[in-house]
Image 1 (cartoon, rainbow, N blue to C red):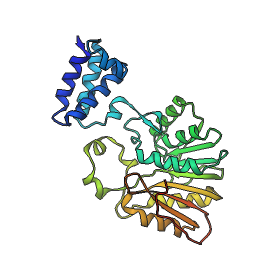
Image 2 (spheres, rainbow, N blue to C red; image 1 turned 60 degrees about the horizontal axis):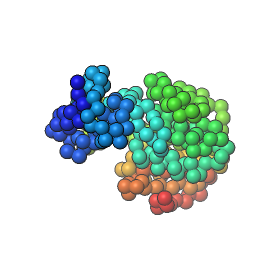
Image 3 (cartoon, rainbow, N blue to C red; image 1 turned 30 degrees about the vertical axis):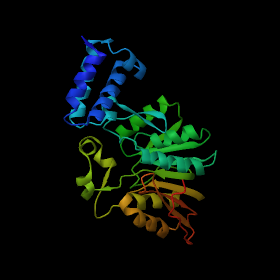
Image 4 (cartoon, helix red, strand yellow; image 1 turned 90 degrees about the vertical axis):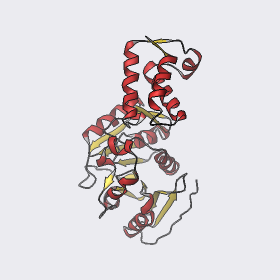
Length: 294
């Protein structure tokens, strides 16, 4: 039998060749908390608590996963997005804080009765967060991956969020017969040439089809979103997209050329070009604002 303290000490020792002392400690506690069903207070206050063999095995398997560069969120199978619990697996990307900024921007602009269309929904985190923030909104979300849609549907049920999910490849046709007030998307945008700068835990475990685009056509999804907006966005509707920080101006020009009257490029909390808002579709007069305005 292992006590909390004994397993914590073993886990830290195993993790430290790969992680700093502080990271190893935090990861060990996170794994113990998750699989031991213990609160942080219990972990600190009752280190002598004995753990069952099943919990010990789960923790040791989780530590092995972390040593193989598996992200903690995939090890535990869960994360938080905008404060809401989300299941994550290898079928979906782990939601990023930058995407929370996109949701906050969109939520501040969408009306209470808005029809929202989330393209490339993945885990469903964007659609679910918007539905929770704006309960009276009518939210639709699609993805080309059946496995991702299964995760998204479970997340919607977990959060008691009524989302209309459907299968769709945004690079093809869209089986959507409504006009949306808001189209939002965090599509694939990382160029294959950027892999060298990415960490192993992303490259080895996150779904490549949700991450990468060809170097010779990195804006392919944004052209598709602009095309779909012509068909499925209200004349006074708004598009919000997360973007590749290295392609901010190019993406902005794409939407301006597509006919949006105002295209705003916004930086994230790290000062990187990260998101765009497009309004006034179908009007050729262009105005822009490159300030954060958070």
